[in-house]
Image (cartoon, rainbow, N blue to C red; front, side):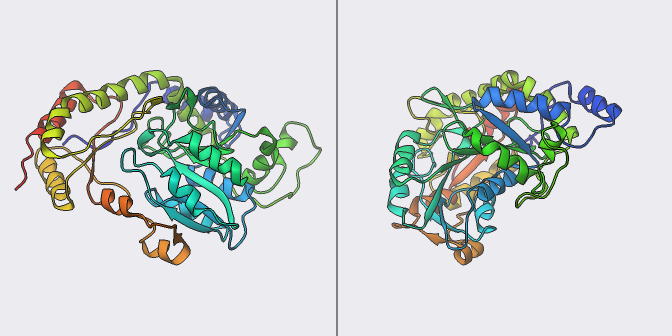
Length: 377
């Protein structure tokens, strides 16, 4: 069975983990926390980043930095992972779910403006599959209404929009280093701070509401409880694994793009003949090769394709279920004007194919052959 995902080992993880253990400093903000942060800052092109224990925690940190209150509204796509909504619901905010574009499956910028009210306090966008959202239009709307944009960039590390790295355009951005992501440390994340004035407070929130980071830098003679906060700082063991991955980033991306490009080229004719839609990458955008999907003509064909691939030794899967119609989505949020018909449609038809660094040409060819062999029953 070709797995849907296989975590990649860059090569220096074991060495770096051994260094951390032997140093005796396994808690956060150690040497590898600093090394990984430096590498990530350069990669994203932001003033600074703070490593977190997950992308979920990075989003929660953003909600705390925004000082959200009960009844505040946060616009976001319905087609996303639950963490995008949970982070703001935990602060009492109301997620306002809007639809996605049928081409990129990214948030529809026209739906964003239609959903803004006097209670809107933030716009959270998701670069689905590592393909950039239409950032010029979104940032223009946000600026006009004086609302910050938060980039949920869990999929998009290394991708660019008109030459700008994803994660560098919103006021804040959240990164994921989960085992399913391009760069991973099992569980991990980062908050990208594109306004460096937010760093000091973000550090305090990340360190359980204390100024402990300033104390260890010698800036204060003791640390105290300063603000709201929680334990969002990852161990240096996680940072060591992440450092090894970030150092191999270019090689990881080369391997992932090779698989993505093979799928896209080899399945073009097959998809056109059968009414299957492949991913769209707009002009001026460079994607991150995070995932490769097919949009089947119907839910029945999606299910039949998944069964067919499993029988052929290929582990494929579907993706997000709409948040606006989920039990918690109906309880905590509301749907923006016009509803989410595209989200409802694509969520039922999407198939994700295996894609990971280290995937061999033979494995890629097996997946392509299995897809091409599919015949509707």
